[in-house]
Length: 380
Image 1 (cartoon, rainbow, N blue to C red):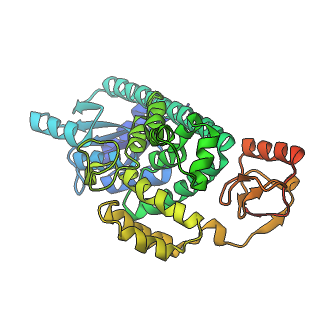
Image 2: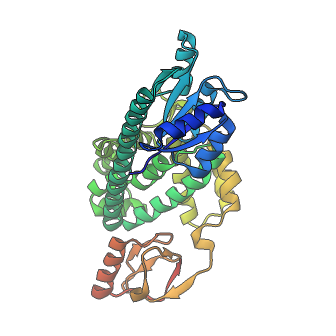
Image 3: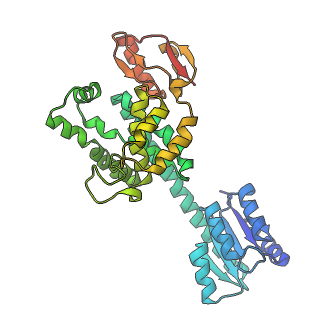
C-alpha cells in the first residue's frame, strides 16, 4: 500500500525539511496553510496521516484538525507545535481528536516513528471499515434475498420503503442513510416465521382469531430480535423495534419512549409504511398525506412535512412509462411496473419490485411450472 502523508506548516523552511528528510520513507505532500490543506484533502486525498502545526495564520492547527475530522474521518491526525502547555494539548485532543501530540523541535526519527504509527492505525481503521461494510452488506443482502423468496409482496413493499427513506433523508438532514435503508429492507423479516395461510388471511381482510392476531402482533419484536444477534446491526434492530410506535408514545412496545426520543428512522418507517399501503391501493399521494395528517399523535410532523416536500414532487415507479417484455427476457435490476401473475391468477411478485438474481430464478421456476402472464411491464 502507498499511503500518503500531508504536512502542514506556514514556514516554507519547515515543509522543505519535511520533504527532504522524509521523502525516502513516505509519500509526502505539503501545504503552507489550513485552507490549502483542506483543498488538497478534497482533491488529492485520501491521506493516511496529516501533520499540522498549531500556530498558523487563519485556521490554526486545532481548528484545522477538527474540520479535517469532519471532512476525512479516517485520516489520522498529528499535532506539531512549539507551544507545549497543557491547555494547548487538551484543546488539540478534545477538539481535533488527534492521534499524537509532538513538540518542536522534533527530530526526524521521532516524527518518522509517529508517521509509521499513524499509517499503521490508518490501515487498521480502513481495514475494519472495509470488513464491516462487506460483512454487513453481505448479511443484509442474504436476509433480503430470503424475504424476496419467501414473501415477494413484502419484499416489493420493502424496496418502496427503502427508496422513500432515501428521498426523505436530505429533507430531514440525515447524512448517513445505510441504517435507514437496512431498516426498511429488513423491517418485515419476522414474517418468515409466520405461516403463509395467516399472512394470506390478513392480506385479504379475513378475520383472524386471537392466536393469529398475537402471532402477527409479534412480527416487529421477532424482526428486532433476529437482527440484534448480528454485530453492528443493533441500531437497525432498535429502529425496527419501534417502527409501529406512535409519535405520542402510544402503541407497542409499551414503554415511556415517545416523540423525538424515538429513533428518527423508526418515525420515518411508521409514517411511510402506512403511506405505501395506501399508495399500493391506488390512493393519490396528496390524499394519503391529508389522511395521515388527520391521525393526531400517530406521526412525527417533521416527517410528514418532509414527505410533502419530496414525495409530492416525485413519481413512483408505477406511474412511469416502461416497456413490455416476456418472462424469459426479464433481467436483474429491472423494476416491475405491473404485478407478476401466474396463468392461474396467483400474484408472485408485486409491482415496484426490483428483480434480483434469486427472484429471477423464482420467476423462471414459476414460469416453467404454472406459466407467467405476459407481457410484463418493466422499467430499467
